[in-house]
Image 1 (cartoon, helix red, strand yellow):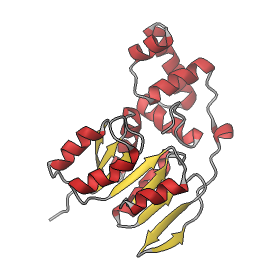
Image 2 (cartoon, rainbow, N blue to C red; image 1 turned 90 degrees about the vertical axis):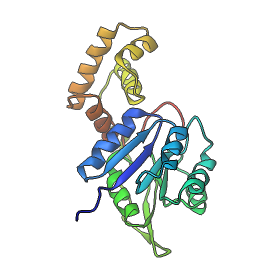
Image 3 (spheres, rainbow, N blue to C red; image 1 turned 45 degrees about the vertical axis):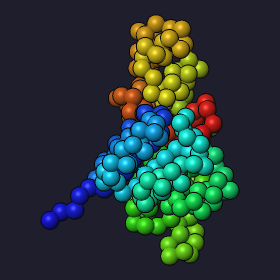
Length: 226
């Protein structure tokens, strides 16, 4: 009898980021459930649905970051990993002390997440930053090979200032119409900018553009602090 596929819950209020991560994890045979709000995720969790790992953004609109792990643990004893744009050793230590199994810096390329998730699913505590990653097995820290330095200048795609604005809004999951309204442009103009962005990134659609852009820039470059 085959075992069921691993289920990973991803809680992040940027839908395209969650979708991109889901597609990367699908290659490894994992199933993801995406939530834009912590409240919806908590309600789902209370239904006792199967889940093997929860990856939760530290900066969500409907819950304070330091309440995330306790709230989840109060509901169910499931593995929780926090990811955040704050590359802060004190923060990573705090969430581990609350019972998290991992802390992932959003300064790390999204393509580096699947191997880290493999480790956490195996029961190992994983902590990453832009400078290094560490795995804690049986309570003992083991320093792993440092992650390569982020190369934002050398790897950044040559987008025009307007294309960069459009790309930032694509990362936030806005539709062409919403982007047009935000930038006071015609939706047709936005489609043309999208085509130019896709051509420069050598991709075919929004999701591929999200993954490729994050690969080139070394991580998230969203305007808000996560």
